[in-house]
Image (cartoon, rainbow, N blue to C red; front, top):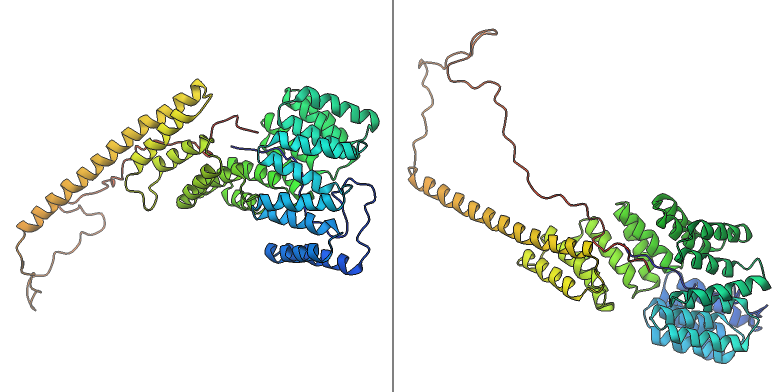
Length: 445
């Protein structure tokens, strides 16, 4: 099961700059520009390419309006065109350095691309330009947390809370520090305080969801992640987390919907692809599961868990186009054992037990095929012994003897009749596995 912690919130904006932390950033003075922004935002809801075209044209027509390049950057991200998104965000910043929404998204994109140093540099440069912007400082704390700098994150969060004791972002970051230290009650207390201040902030519910997961309360975790997606429908991490929990609950159709939504917002999201593969497997869509796992592997070759998932998938199921599923399963599981780093003794034993089962299953299958071949040969010999044209019994002529009547009720059955013989059903001896996700535990990021 693979969960992901949210870093930031790329979103489409029209005239209202809800995401920007800049104070009272004015809407474009030109009514035509405002109208075009609204038109692009509306079009993007159903047709990303059409919305993008409107924003690209707007950026050419209104060179001094940064929102066009910003929105184009958001849509480039949704298409997986990350280099184009970086260029668009930088153009927006060049137009107006005080417009901080593209700065936040640029940093978030760097985090998603595993470039924490780049994200930190982007935010530190922006903080130099706007030292009083607490939202930027909170984004920097989130980057530090992603890089494991818990002490620096805690100190900075406390500095922000001294300046603004009701700063929700700082409270959420501080709760994350406590969560990483397994201080779950303290984390919950801080998050509840943040919720009392602003119950509409989705990051609160995402973090509560992680606390509930650690406390093994999946029902509350699902409720928390669902609340986050209701408050903001464009958070890929929240949809991924919800989908992962639906897989765990064996609600595979709901999981597929949530994970496809996550991938529509973030097409190269490895965690969501792994979880979607698990959902397809649970829903018996084995070909789709295989293709999704392979896509996740292409995007993240270092993720050895995908190899384990592919091995189990082929061991348990015959996938169309696969000649010998047991040999394929063995190859994936051996690659997993040779490439996975930091495997626990339990994880290594589990993978080795599957390799043993591969050999056993292959022998059972070979024996089954031999038995079927032997039965077919015996039947062919028996059929060959039968007369080619056996005469059919003639119908009785009028006056011939009639069949004996059936015994009267209460009478004795005829000699040789069978009575009360139970039918013999097939014997079942296959190995049952409870493996809803087929991934290593403890892989939350």
